[in-house]
Image 1 (cartoon, rainbow, N blue to C red):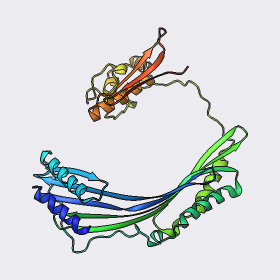
Image 2: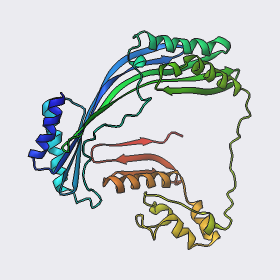
Image 3: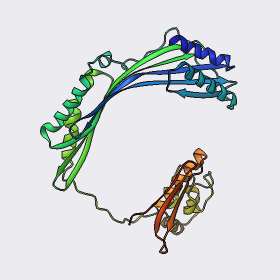
Image 4: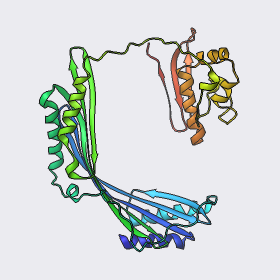
Length: 330
């Protein structure tokens, strides 16, 4: 495949790109899933990916595929080159990097002991974590253990040809402890790149210990709390790329002169309090939908129907591809 990757770069140049770079990701992952103190499932997945970056007159185009099929790779090369010709020039771009006499390598990213460990080891690690969680505590555990082996390679039209391998072991255990009507949950997690640094015993025992230690904790009471707006012009500092909901402030889409901070700074504390009283869950939902529409240039509509008393009885969501409505349960 190495020779084909080089040909793919040359193919981009034949398509009249000035410079082309190809990124290859190949590897696999093994996963063991845990449910209710036992192994629930185990699977292995192949990881593949190709990324193309092309420059034409300093305009950049990028395209990706998860297929290593030759026709698929040629297809994304063509797409990247086409996009580069349509993109505005990047004035800061000078050139892709050229080849090194000796490519730098980062130590500690790969351990052959992880790649070469027997297939039975990962399930055994998961069982060990479960046993250690249950050794001293009455808990219910779930989670997963994962092994990842992957290599990344880069080829470009300036002569770069290099690769780096990576390995990791990951384990996470979620534990639930119960005592009468009291329920507490906690978890523990490890991700390492060296086999001898991984401890499933610690993951299991710590998750269980932490969950049990939370039993009997004082519960937080719900209720209404007052909000004190003192010296409002100084304490409000909001940064957002989401348009302000017109139902809250009656404003146009987001701009520097129309942000929440700008609007509130022009109001008295009394006026601010009156504005904030009108904020509810529907305002917030509409703000999120409007933000998505603004960023993705879409036209998603979110509506609510009210009964004669002004209470919401149904919500509706409409997009270009689907629409649904659902009544609100009382």
